[in-house]
Amino acid sequence: MRYIEPHAHMVSRVTDDYEAMRLAGCAAICEPAFWAGFDRSSADGFYDYFCQLTDYEPKRAAKFGLPHFSWLCINPKESEDMGLAREVIALIPEFLKRDNVLGIGEIGLNKNTRNELAILQEHVDLAVRHGQLILVHTPHLEDKFKGTRLILDLLKADSRVEPGRVIIDHVEEHTVDMVLDAGFWAGITLYPESKATPARAIDMVEQAGMRNIWLNCACDWGRSEPLAVPKTALEMSRRGHSSEAIDHLVYGNPLRFLSQSPRFRLS
Ligand SMILES: [Zn+2]
Image (cartoon, rainbow, N blue to C red; front, side):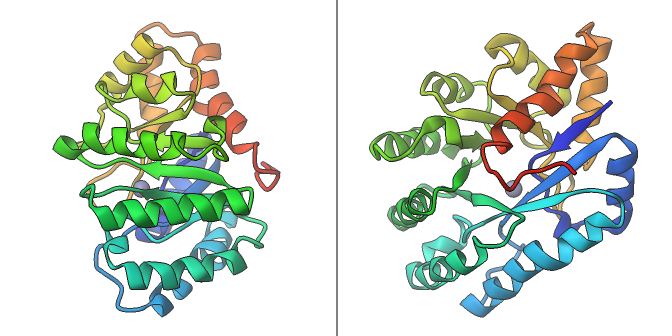
């Protein structure tokens, strides 16, 4: 089996996870910038983090033959501080020149506040001005439906945004159709406790169809499963899905979306 892990926070994982993912058939890992578990005290903290994502982490992955790519931004949680957010956004263009950076992400909303929306808009503007792909985080639980709607309205209001170059991640049963119907890609995140279990994810895919959906583990420092994508593929196989269909979902789809960036190469 082969698969691409399009959303994993490897800076918070041990090196053994790289080996396990490689052994399970992983062909590439993509790492969006996220909240580190604490609020950083200055833009310098983000500068160092962007260096870690674009320099150190790809070297760690390369030891296991894994291409590693990243997405850059200030996450929605910390973007509540608009002064800090603007300082961080000003750092990003320099890093967009690096040949393992795929785009702007994971931007989006956390608590659906006015400040978060303003910074989301500024990130979208940065992405379109630099011709970058966009990866969007949608809020958790009770904020998800409203947050997803706000994000889609903001993106649709900007005529420069091409929906096929935007992935809306962490969709659930009540948000997947509105994302796909508007022409965006949808990401289903597999978590042991919150977000989707493998069974729920496959139910969603069976209902919504496989076009323009990717699966990801979004593993981080919390309880999460770096092998969630291959484990879900196994569950699909148990349900009788063909190996071609599984390959299409876990390898072909992320390959098709990510290849819109000329930087995404598997060898
Ligand atoms: Zn994430």
